[in-house]
Figure 1 (tube, rainbow, N blue to C red):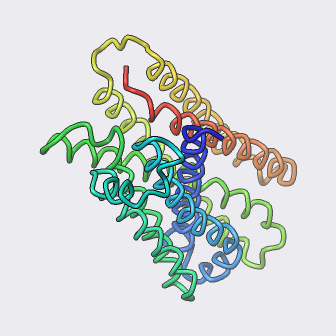
Figure 2 (figure 1 turned 30 degrees about the horizontal axis):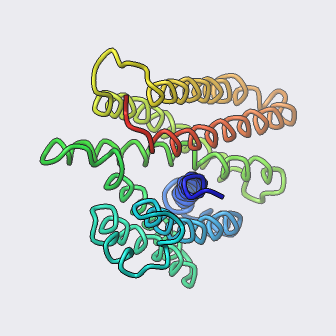
Figure 3 (figure 1 turned 30 degrees about the vertical axis):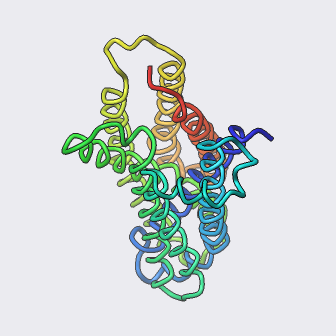
Length: 292
């Protein structure tokens, strides 16, 4: 496998892990009623453990890949002098904090109760914010640079709430008939839907701001970066359409045709999740290109 492909693969996995970790932990700390959180933590345990371990593993692999890319490829990865040089760069310094935040998530797995859930959320949020200090988000300096990073952080956190919250939706909808407290599950899902409207709006607004900052001129020249960005925007638009269909067409039909509506809701949510995975894959690729 080429080093570039290795980097893209683990970048995609890193994004996916962080979104799943943050999205799942939001449910068990903020969205669910207090009495339902312990039960929810048990149901999300496999998701949160996998996402936490994967976020640390992929963060390490991305540092390995970046070291090779900054040097002469795979052969320099074992060179300690190259590692020291990379760790002194802006990327290397920022990524050390990324590794620390990922380690918090793994340490959280040794704790119990709400402390574990809050540490997992802190780990996910910390790593997402950390991504605003590497790559294109560092193009500007001074006050403009901090505003760019703030906007990028908002974009990533909003996307993680939306896309990362879809797997928990599927788990809850699947388990709904067997839950002893279905009312709490419904309340949790409705809270996710309510705040999800805000998250979607923030994704769109912050994404537009990012595009205006990164693209050198308007209208853009529609180079490869702009073309992939447009494709990403179209896919996000389809995701919005699916989300609106679920919320305003299927949910009102749960009482009249509950089982069929629930099954269709799960299928459309799965489609939305697959679209989100494709969006993340696109971002992982075009974020390595020069904006044009």
